Amino acid sequence: MATSRVTSAKKSSTSPGSTASDKRPAIQKTPQPIINSESIDLAPVIYADTLIQIGFGPFVTKCTFGTQHSTAKSINAVLTLALPTNAMIDLAKNILAVASAEGQEEKINNIYNNFQANLKTMVRPKL
Image: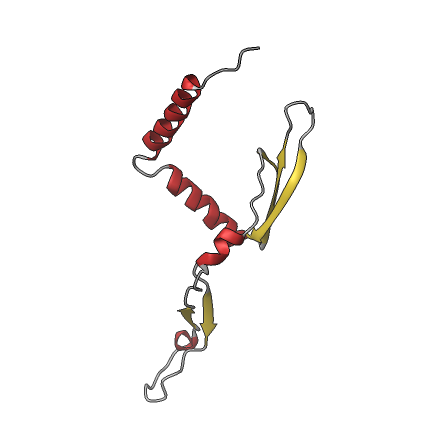
């Protein structure tokens, strides 16, 4: 996600008749940070079944995720993710872009069908 920094634009002293629009700040994009790819494998993974709650604000958005065990009637919260709202919107856009990419539906269906086929070929224990 690109962030922006506002700096003052220099007013030209050689141009007579300058207007107020010459004083507008110039927007400069800050460079993207370099992602430490080694840290990705070290990040904790927390499994969740469902989204329980969203707190959407102008600056920060929080999403609480939870799990439900097969014998339980309630859902337990396991993680609250808090991100700047702009980053959360970018996250949603990226998820939708990946999910709707050409061939993605067929790829997921093939993986699921292979999984089902493997289950059918497993030796079932005799009870």
